[in-house]
Length: 174
Image (cartoon, rainbow, N blue to C red; front, side, top):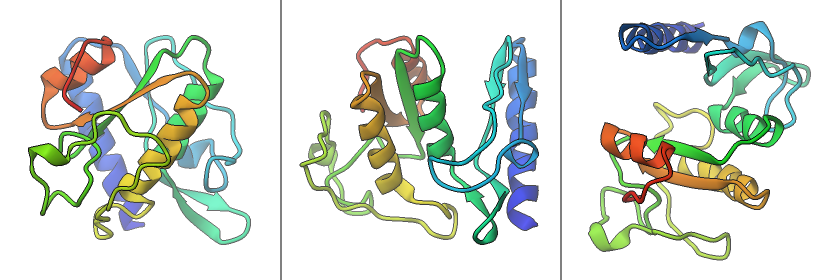
C-alpha cells in the first residue's frame, strides 16, 4: 500500500530526528494494534515510558475492509484517555492556525485566535495529501477535546519555536 509505505517512511525520518536530538522515543504504527476508523476505533493505545509516536495509518476496518485511521482521531483518544493531559497542539503545515478563509486568500487579519463551534470558517482541503478530513476534522476533534477541559492550540508547524512555546503553554501566535 502506497499510503502505508509513505507513512512508514515519514515515521522513520521523525524517529531518526528524535534519536539524533537525544530523545527516547518509540513508534507504534496503528496497523499493528488498531482496527476501525473514526474516534471509536478499537485497540489499546500504546504508551511508552519515553516519547510515544503514533501516526495516521491504513488499518483494518470491519465495514470497508480497510481505511485510514486519522491522526486527528488518534490524538482525540490520547487526549481523553491518557491521565493529566494539559493541552493538545496541532502543528498545521505552513499556516498560523485556523483561518476564516483558505490560506490562498487569507491575510494576517483572517487568523482566528479564539475559535468556538458556533463560528464559521471556510476550510480548504488538500485531498491529494490529506485523505482524512483536513482542517475541518482538526477543528471538530479539537472542539471535542476542549469540551473535555483540555486546552487545544493550532500553530504553524513550520515554526519550531511556536510549536515548543505551544507545548510549554506559553503565549503563541495561532
